[in-house]
Length: 334
Image 1 (cartoon, helix red, strand yellow):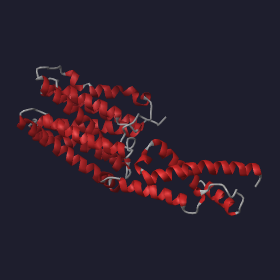
Image 2 (cartoon, one colour; image 1 turned 90 degrees about the horizontal axis):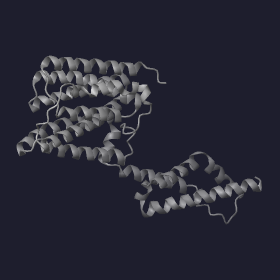
Image 3 (cartoon, rainbow, N blue to C red; image 1 turned 45 degrees about the vertical axis):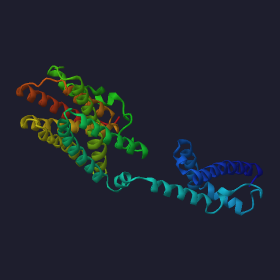
Image 4 (cartoon, rainbow, N blue to C red; image 1 turned 90 degrees about the vertical axis):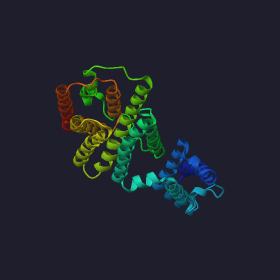
């Protein structure tokens, strides 16, 4: 090999050696620091150096005696780099918590467990709130707690994109600028408003509805649909939609009228279908979360219409939701 080529090899080895030493020393002294973005890039560079075949070529040159004897070459030791990368990966896996291990083992079971926690938790929280004399207080506390757990879990395990907590991958034009979604979201504006509720009760009610919108999208779309999608998109869309609608049956336990609840199950399933398709096509839950929160929050002050109007509104919401979802499913991905 020519001197000029050897010069570049030496410069590369010296550069990689500095990174190798930095990562190795940090791993031995303070392994948690390797979670910093700067160290993630360094580890990625070391992996790339090893897996690209460049390490093997440099190692062969060293074996042939073509590298200077005084060159620091710890990164070229037969097992040094390989063992370091393996140790880092093993330590990272050991640091994963119980929730992550359950998630990796069975995403669908993970989603079902959260659905059960959510449904029974919120159902009982409302009753407990009434018992303490402050409506929605326990509901809000419970919602904040499980939201915090989920957000921490998602962020600490870098699952934001997996659960759709990111920008849509397609432009608003692809989704008809979300006009049908805006129409669906405005349902409670059609009936008029009443602001006679006490300030504290109203505040807690809006906050609880905010939490419900966020949690239901994360659980029914981000978790259940994402977990089932690996085994088939069609079945995942159907189950996620129907499960979301059926979940509203719990309102019966809170004293909601049977007719209104059954009607809600029907149009909620349709809206769930629409939301699921939006998530599937755009890989983002943000439009669904915003829409869901708006519907929930405005329901706190919305007047209760007569059954005939309620049925008509539910029919419009169902037709628009299903039509919009079908349009997005059949639209070419351009």
